[in-house]
Length: 259
Ligand code: ADP
Image (tube, rainbow, N blue to C red; front, side, top):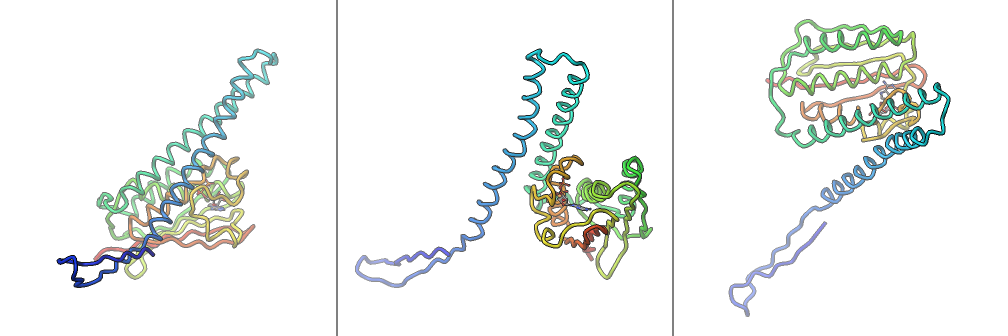
């Protein structure tokens, strides 16, 4: 807390009052800290694939590798790391766009039933490629809400994509949508690896991962849930997680229906 004392004078010899200005700068400090942390993290996250790419390019350029198979393997790694870099940049841009326009987000008509069906169809091949059964129980007549349609879709994609990524082959992912009181409730439930209790409070932070190596292996950027959180805020909603290690996770999104 910042306190400032100002002397109110109309005549240099006469004090007519004192004003104390109390300005709360803790919030500003906190935001500055988050921002500077984010820049450090971004630099680090971008550097990792870049170092790998430039290392393999150097090796290939040096002409010391004769074996065709090894060359091919190195090219594959360069390809994978380039893709990761692209995804990272896309996610950073998405997050910054959503964050910067959260309070003046588009107020389009969003029909949750249609959107959920569309995303389910879109994600089905990804699930079945991994041997995961994606199913749904969606109320046919969910009321319309207002917000950004693309963001709504992105939120569903990120949650379902995570459910698929962190569920081993043979598992199940269930998407549900229903109305409860003045809210639309959306759940994404999986039979996957689950999340340890201690990690739950930090899950929606940027670049926070339970297991960094696993996230990398499945192509994660560590920004998916941070994006989800900001989208939900733009809809004035909230999100809850229930999870048990080794059993699965359930993400519940609650979005208010405006009267
Ligand atoms: P990532 O790109 O690493 O998946 P996210 O922000 O989407 O980043 O998620 C953050 C972390 O939360 C993940 O690294 C993972 O550890 C955990 N997580 C997210 N969704 C699930 C899920 N459905 N099951 C298990 N763990 C999950």
